[in-house]
Length: 119
Picture (cartoon, rainbow, N blue to C red):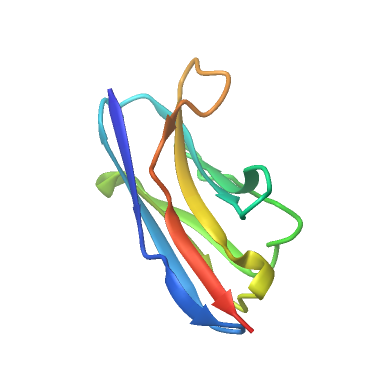
């Protein structure tokens, strides 16, 4: 089993920065990738960013390119999401997810952390 726990959310003003963290524990030896997703009230969960565990290649949603940076610390089984120039439309619950080798999609999800950006 794998457990994923996010932290770092909060209430900030537009233009501020925030860093989210996500720690994975348990059977993480075959981690393939970790990603961040978000869900605003009344909307579907959407992809934000992802990083491959072995190589560190990254991908981003167009809406966050240039403002968000995903990174990882393999030794700590931790992935980060650095967010700058935050906008009110970034307000959402942010979820971390993990995909292991052989998984066709992200299987392990955290409970989410709330990010609220005031204008």
